[in-house]
Image (cartoon, rainbow, N blue to C red):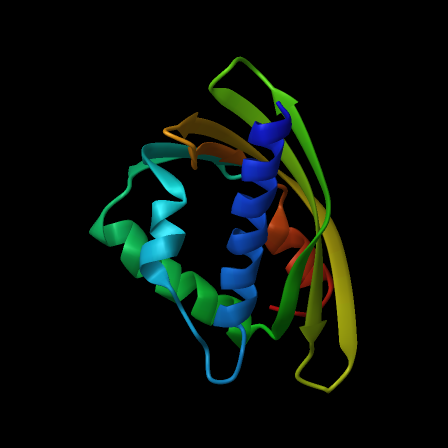
Length: 148
């Protein structure tokens, strides 16, 4: 598990770095590496329901749009505060990330939101891939905080 833990920690460190790079001015968006973080097929679950998708052109298009959306609502950073890794078997892991997100509102005030996301990963040939994730009701919180 120690080697797997190091691989997963490095994987999510790079994942967060890509997110923060996309929030810079000018943004640095690495669509290919972001898409490569996901398995060939993956599933996402949120309070809106469960949806699955194929890792392809649509995902790549949505990555750029997603980063642009976060910039538009004033997201200035997305950092990992805690990462808990639970092995499922020798190839599969659950990673719970406690995120710290920072925002600059249109009126100039700053805000901070902490939240947890859960990711399910498979490691093949030393490379982790997200095959599923579970998120909270992000839209509700953003609306309550006046970010949308």
